[in-house]
Amino acid sequence: MQAFAASGYEGTKTDEIARLAGVSQPYVIRLFGTKQQLFLAALHSVCGRIEEIFREAAAETPELSALGHNYKRLLSERELLLVLLHGFSASGDPAI
Image 1 (cartoon, rainbow, N blue to C red):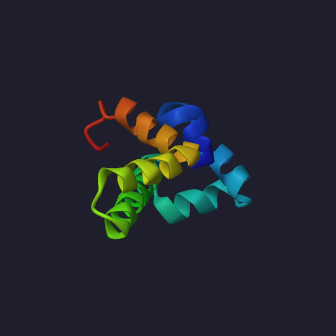
Image 2 (image 1 turned 90 degrees about the horizontal axis):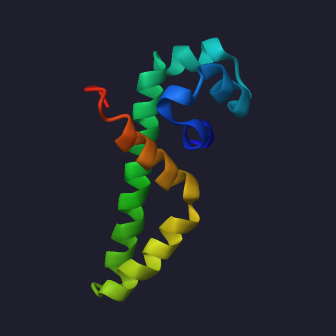
């Protein structure tokens, strides 16, 4: 997340992701296959977290104020929103 949030899909290298994760670059590729598949996994994780935050709000109370409160929580997880924005910008790629 950190690497994609900082540099986006095109600007992130798998060796940077591996360095941040404390593993080798071949290991990253073995786990995910390609950088594209890794980026898609990151996007799925981001969307899942956003959904989780909003579902928690709905479970607290069906009022708009709960959604607003949890939206503030979402804003505090800056990397999520940055990865989501990079996903929008990379959406010209049909696989993304």
